[in-house]
Figure 1 (spheres, rainbow, N blue to C red):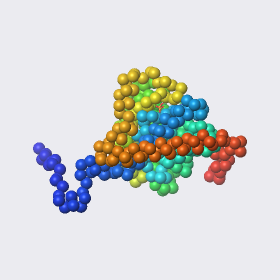
Figure 2 (cartoon, helix red, strand yellow):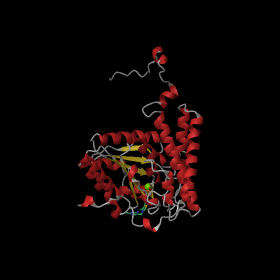
Figure 3 (cartoon, helix red, strand yellow):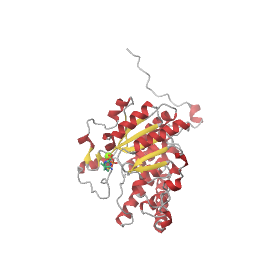
Figure 4 (cartoon, rainbow, N blue to C red):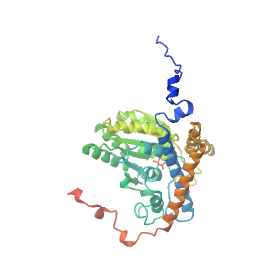
Length: 357
Ligand SMILES: Cc1ncc(C[n+]2csc(CCOP(=O)(O)OP(=O)(O)O)c2C)c(N)n1
Ligand SMILES: [Mg+2]
């Protein structure tokens, strides 16, 4: 019989106490994640939540044309991954990509401006909500065709591997993409070439108006299929920014060190409908309420307080983010719609084509 391990934690020695050794709540705050990273993630969570609420208001005022796909309730996936990425890593995401673009550092004025079709937007207002892109921040595009960007993320990873740049490609997609051929093709190729890519499936239980469980052979649409590609099954609580951060960091570090791809399934929930055209009435009220009780933002706020962060520090971040958002909103509103001279910018002609020769 195996010897029982001693489980009693050693008492902190007097010397350790004199050296200012941490204990209790502050020890947990300064664990492997640490206070600075946690405050950074809280700020990211708020930036995304506040901006998306503001985008919703602007949509209701008819200042955002078309529709928008909000990720309210799902922010911890983007924040946890964004906090784990290096500055020059690549992000690929879907039409529900405000969060993924923002956590890479795209400015709020440029994101709101893009949503409103203004010249100050990331793409001079010509792409809109579904196409947020900011190459200078490593945000390599938002793709509206389900699954289409997975092979592109693999291509970026291949390029990074070929150049020996050490960059990692992080690719976000919905549960719906797991039933698309490109998901399987991308995984297979990434594995055989051991590419530095991290696939992050945001399983929010629905693909548009259809429960993913109704149309999928397995319970966990991404994690249960990982073994088919020789990958580990990784299932994480997508409403817990710390859990996502730890999981993403491990996968990103593995990829950067030449250990090949990972597939993460983060379980989460969108509080609102698929798009602003969808009231989301096909979902049971109890389901929505249960997930709202696990809202990633109040949960994270409470964790910070439990870890001993002062209320003033937390509310200071909240006030600063709201102030920055108010300024960004006014700047974006004041920006003109793009002039005709911008029609042919951000297309191949002005991006240069020498790479093709
Ligand atoms: C190839 C393709 N088929 C169908 C659609 C229509 N469509 C738009 S969003 C969507 C649902 C996708 O669900 P999921 O991947 O779970 O992402 P979520 O919206 O939940 O973030 C579908 C089917 C599409 N955009 N592309
Ligand atoms: Mg979904």
